[in-house]
Image (cartoon, rainbow, N blue to C red; front, side, top):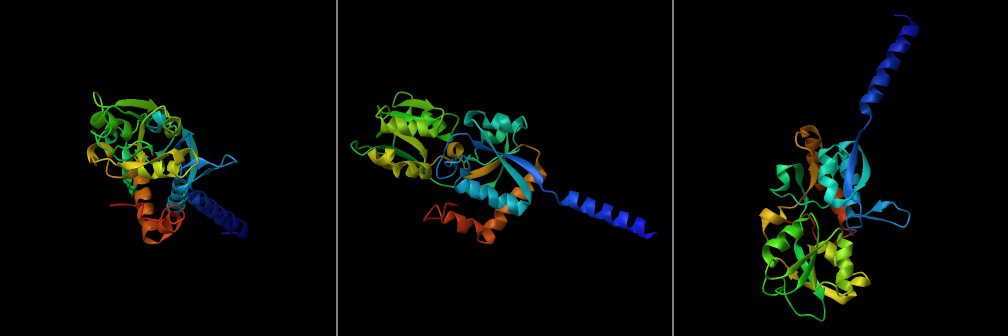
Length: 258
């Protein structure tokens, strides 16, 4: 083989290796509205928060090029199944109902579901305590399903909102009596200026069939290779300390949960 031929052969091998090493691009669906402390745009429009750091960590571990793709929450599963996005990292609970349509990775966090209301009102997070109240929930969430089953109809009025922020703001304005959501997201609201009006009334009684067994990465059915990469990455960042390192910047407890 001539020296020129050898050079060309080496170049072809290096080019092939470079192409093989290119990270797979994956469009990651987030809810388009702020959901602190998990996801929200900063003053420059850059998405930040605990789930953004989680995404960065697993994508780096799995050698994926992940591109944030904001999608309206009530259309995020159709966006996944129609291949407009490739996975969902948006505090989506793993439920039996959703598993009929999509698949999930292993759990990456699990937190309680809470009820908040005005400090001036005394009630608890039970059907008896919420009887006659107007409860705000975000549409297409496990919280809407849970509140509908346990607190209405005939007991409380369930008021639906497109975003969690709208429900929280209506509570602050006195247009609803209570709001149900993930306890961590509610805590972020209670620590804000608008949330000073209100307090946690308690966590609801668990119902895994509705609320799920934790939050997972939403995936299309049949995407076994991607699912394996994501599960391996979750396991790795939990084992090597990366998960705990970025989580401690947001929480003073183990968000991974039981």
